[in-house]
Image (cartoon, rainbow, N blue to C red; front, side):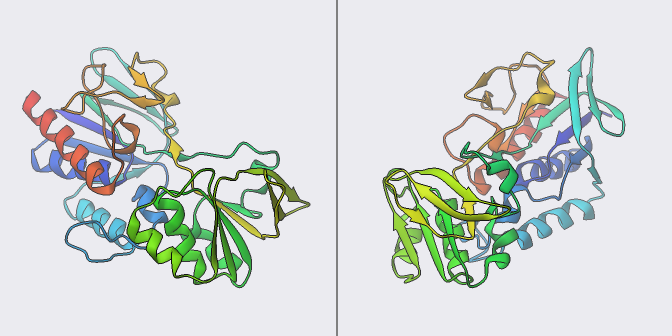
Length: 292
């Protein structure tokens, strides 16, 4: 039986696993954290067909339950290296696995601002997930950095918990009109455009942020939502074609390395949505099925 290892159990990886299992291909799904990927950080999803509105964690749970009900085991492990001879060798922290195909579905890691103290303050005033950490700032003033859908979704969630939410955008808002209209009617959300965070004030915890226009915001928390980048060091031994840090694929989701596929947010493409990630997973699995 042909075997495929999927690295990452977000919506793209889980949907690939579902299609592979139904095609009779042996599949191993490896996830270093909790199944669901970026969905777990989303309070409310309203653009996934079949659900008018659903919590990201709930949707992730439904997907992972469906996977497990099919008999697919999700291994909790971290992939360290992928090499290829006749077959792929996937080396994890716990073991080495062999497969005919590998699907990379590891998503993106949040991008940082690159300011002094940012790493030290993570968990002490700086967060990349409002759903995860927002309750720690109940009744306090916070800032959200970013102007896209993710940033405004964070701001809206925090506005129900916090006294005041500043949205700091380096240019103008890029979020969809629905989110922007919701932000406008929230009296405790203040949008500051054409400014950047230039400095963090802190002792043991964040106490305020200083903007490049000289203004100081006395916030207890800062939520950074400026996108992310794939972390693909485990592919360093393979000659994988990349563009801007993302894996380049063909229409079948196959990379420049025969048998290595990329799906979801690790793939170089125009749109990064749950529905496009799910589609990528299905296409990769169907492409592997055709290989047989």
